[in-house]
Length: 594
Image (tube, rainbow, N blue to C red; front, side, top):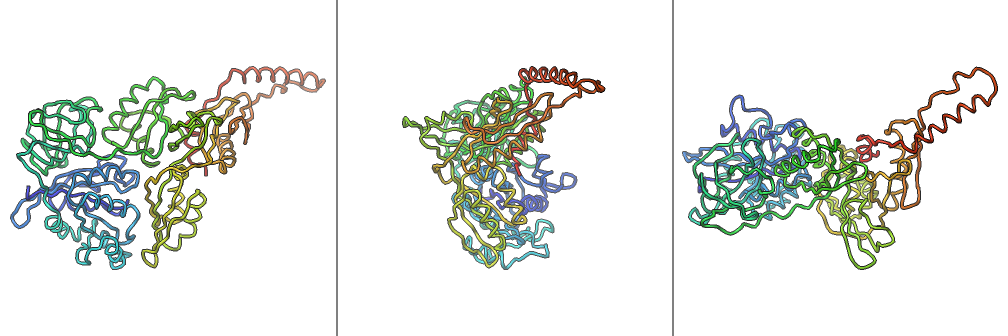
C-alpha cells in the first residue's frame, strides 16, 4: 500500500487535462507505439470529435522511482459544468488531485468549483501551470492568481506543457512525495466503493471500485449492500488500457469486478461491495444527483418504446447523472421524462442514443421543475407544463434560482451585466481578481439560463468568459403557461412555462418560427399562441391551391365562382379531418429562437 498513489486531474474545460494525461502515460510507458494517439483516454467517438471529455477515465500506471516500483491510479475527469457529477465521483476515489491551469487563460470558473470539490474531500492539491510552450503564456500573472486562490508557495507550482512534455518528471515526483498513500486495513472486512460502471454486451455489467479496507479475491462470494444482491466475483483486476485480471486486490487499489450481472438496476454508483461471510459497514456513497433540466425523450416510431427503455437503462449505468421516468404525450405517444444536468448533457445523451443504440428520438422543449402552492394549502412539484393544475387553484408558483459565478476579462463586464439583467438576474457582487479579470456573482432564475444563456455569454465575451453555477433555492415568480395551438388543437409537447413579461414576445416568435418550419398542406393551418383562453399571437400557413379556374376562358363570372365554391367545400371538409404533423426540426428550433 505504501507504493500506491490515487489521483485525479481537475481543470476548467479545454485547459489540457487529457493531453497532459497522454504525456504521463507515455512517460511511464503505460501506452506505447501504435496504441498511442491524441487524447488516448477519451475513448468515445463523441469525445474525439468534440475534443471534450464526457466520462471520467481510470487507468493504472507502473512507475519506478529510485529503484522502488509504484502503482499510480490516474482518473482523467471532464471539465464542463454539465459533467461535474463525474468529477465529484472521481474525487471520492482519490487522495490527491492535479489542478491544471492554462497559462494563457488563468483561473476560470470551473477551476474554482472543481477545486472546492477537491478541498471538501481533503485531497492534496498539486497546482500545475499548463501550456507553457505557447507564446502568449503569462506564467507570473497566473501564478499570482493561483497563490491568491489556494495559498501555496510559488515553488509549489509546477510549470509544464502537455504538448512538449516539459515538467512531466516534476509532476510525477510531486505525486510520489506530496500525495499520501491510501490508508486501509487488509485484514478488516471488505469495503469497496463503486464509483462507475459500464455495460458490456458479452460479459454483463463491469463495476469500477476503490477498496478502502479488506481484500477481494477472484471467486469470492460478494454482496452489494444497497441492493442486497449476492454474486460470485468471476473476475477482478486493474484498469490499464484494457482490463487486466489479478487474483487479489488489497486496500487502496482501484479496480473492476465482473460478476455476470445482467440488469442495470442492480448496480448503483456509490454502493459498497463487501463479503457475504464477513460483511463490512456500508460506506457513505455520493449525494444524489439533482437534475437541472427536464425534457421528454420519445421514440420516433412508437414500436421502439421498449428498445428505448433498454437503451436508457444501459446509458444510465455509464452516466449516473441521467434520471428518467415513463410519461406519455398526446402528440408524441409514449416516452420518457428525462432529467439532465444541462443542455450539453442533453445533447450528448441524444447523440449517444443515436450512435450507440441506433435509436431515433424526438426531444421536447427542455424546462426546469417548479414548486406550486395550491389554494387548499398543499404543494406539488411540476416538471411538465402540461401537468400544471388549473390556474384558479394556484396560490403561487416558485421557480428554482441559481447562484451564477462568471469570470471574465474586464472589457466585457458591461455586455455580460446587460445579458444577466435581461435574464432577470440580480447582481450580488463584483470583484477584481487582477486588473484585467473580474468575477461577477448573480442570482438568476434557472429557467432563463436553460435555453441559450451559455451560447450568448460565449459570443459576447469572444469565448473569454467562464461560467459556473449551483442551485440556491426557490423564489416566487409570476409565471404563465404558454400553449401552442395548431388549428385549435393544443400541441402539448410545445407548451412552456414562462415569465409573464416575456410571454407575448416568445409566443409571437414561436408562431413565426413554426410558420417557416411546418410544411404547407392543402388547407389553411392556423398557428396560435395562447395563455389560458386568451390568444396572444397568430400566424396562418396558406393552403397549397390548385388553379381550378384555369379551364375557364371568358364566359360569365358565375362559372368561375361555381368552381371556386366547389373547391372551398372540399378544403373545409379536408380541414375537419386533416391533421398536422410537427417535424422534429420545429421542436429543436424552439430552443434556438434567435
